[in-house]
Length: 301
Image (tube, rainbow, N blue to C red; front, side, top):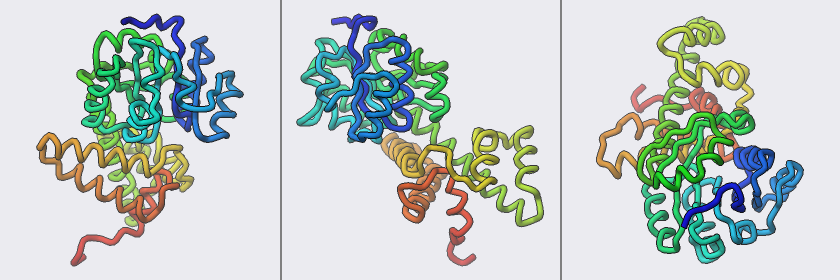
């Protein structure tokens, strides 16, 4: 059964730092959106943006033709969609679930299989770009899953992102997101180490950043993160170390699952897990710089 997206009720589950601006954009564009988040502050913020706030995930999803999840991990997505108190049974016939969270791709494939038995099509559509691009509607969106389902919800995705990529079968979007964040974290780690080495030798970190940004060392971290968050020591990019460490574990787990040797991925994932344990769940991911300042070298150094 097809969904008429123009008249469908949309349930948006998860109104955190990313989910709130995304759901608010849908409301502003005229979509019929019911949102839920267990945080009263998040719910109040969505209401202030003109959204309809539900008292529970099940209430938000009752009769919805589309349900969007923007949650911390795949386990939370499975629980809210297919768990004992999940919303699957209350969705409209032929509903489409869009998991825009950063979930584990193998788990996403399993969840899609389970939801299909209830007549629900799942696509994975994780995003990249951070809060600013969520507000602007210029996110990069990586879409995996059934092509017909992806086409049906593309107008909704185009309201949220300016670069939409169909990556292949279900789970491929989540795989791409984890691998993207692995590359991002490796670049940030290398950039922070380079600044510390250069500063010790007498180089100015700001000048180093300018040179990197017109040279082959340029990456997203050198362009976007070094000056405002690392050099300024604000460590306030808005993306947590906990989420980055989780995505790095996902990338490393994927390499193990596929039997692909990935020694650097393993090393980066371990480094960030150690940083998370040292700095705590509340640390911003750019605070990896602080951890590198105190991390001891290998045994024997």
